[in-house]
Each structure stands twice: as C-alpha cells, then as structure tokens.
Image (cartoon, rainbow, N blue to C red):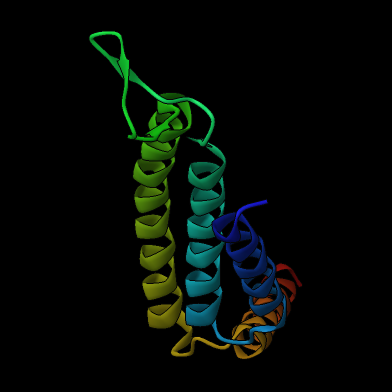
Length: 127
C-alpha cells in the first residue's frame, strides 16, 4: 500500500469519528466533506499505475502514468460532492434560521417542544 492510500484511510476514519461525535452541525458538514475528499484521494492513489511505462516511437520513456478511469470517476464524484455540499450548507442555514442554533441536541429539543405544543393546540381545537 502506498503512503497516500494509508493517509486517505486514516483521514477517512478520523473524519468518520468526528462525524459521529460532533454536536455542532457545522462540524458535521466539514467532517462529511473530509470523508468525501479522503475517498477521492484513495481512489486516485489506487489509480496510479507504477508498473506501466508509456512508449513513444517505440522507445520506453521514464514517465509514469495514471489510469484514466478512476480519474474520470473522481471528477464526477467531485462535481456531485460540490452539489451535495451546497445542499448541506443550504439546509444548515435554514435550520439555523428556524432554530437559532447549530447544536443538534438544542435543535431536537426545540423541535420536540414545538411538536408537543402543536399537539396540545390540536387537541384543544378538536375538543
């Protein structure tokens, strides 16, 4: 295994750990972005072909090449990742506007209290 692949695996699991333990929504978004980046880094590291050397006019060159298929797939993953990150940030902004917090637990408590208030109002209307 190459060092870049090992680094990508370590970065993925550290990001996953941060995703699981984070209480703030912003940290959750950042950790998910880091997970995406580590996956892309891993696949680009795997796509590097160390054994194939291109030839030019029948003469073997000293250049090393990379497999174009993982590169094409990772460009697509980057574009999709940017779109998904935009949606995450938009949702984060709307949650902050609604609940005035970026803490997961505070937002859950506020939401539960609003649901309970709505249920009691609904019961009062029907009785």
